[in-house]
Image 1 (cartoon, rainbow over the protein chains, first blue to last red):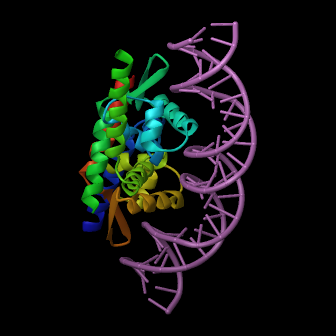
Image 2 (image 1 turned 180 degrees about the horizontal axis):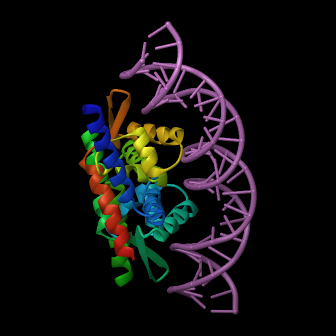
Image 3 (image 1 turned 180 degrees about the vertical axis):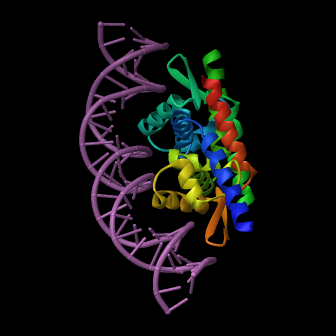
Length: 116
Length: 116
DNA sequence: TTAATATATGAATAACTGTTCATATGTTAG
DNA sequence: CTAACATATGAACAGTTATTCATATATTAA
């Protein structure tokens, strides 16, 4: 009977989904990473850093806003492993943490283009 | 003189960053997409849908929470083009909208694994 | 048509988050 | 050491968002 078959099939999918669900901790860490890159100001910072490392003042120039706001956002990005930083004299140079970040940014843009 | 050279180089990077910055509208749409997948509950829904389309009740089983809360989240995911849906009788079956979503999920997991 | 099931939604509250302002820390030059 | 510069941070306010509750819509069965 068709209804039963599909019901069984769907229920099986639901079971698989529940069994393969990552742990709450993993889900929360992934969510935190996405949340970190989900605010326009922070996203602009990442787009700016695509072209190489920048000090805070140059990031402020590139994305607009106050030094304080950008600095707060940079801290959040760093805490979530999205950017890394190194000191050079008085300046602290920020850059994208790894190639995953670059890839995700490009995928997001591709996704956007598709929707147009 | 080293300081001047580096300063020029950095300033050049800042200029490039500003020139290649996507428009505010684009940045906001990308940010909205990431925001859509940045809450643990919604992320769980996406992980559940990796295994195929599911009706709302099965999604509720897979991710926990109330039917109402899940339904609200599904609406948000759909409004941002992260999932799509089709009706089949009484049920509405949800699935991931496109391969970009799948790819981003996998990248996020890879990023997470690297940090351990 | 009526009852039952599946899904969606409006309103309200509670929790969260971004920005601002003032100030602190750390580095270099004099 | 002191002044100047670059960056970071704590607290508070404003805006945003997730959840809950009650209810509405839509489909199917009888």
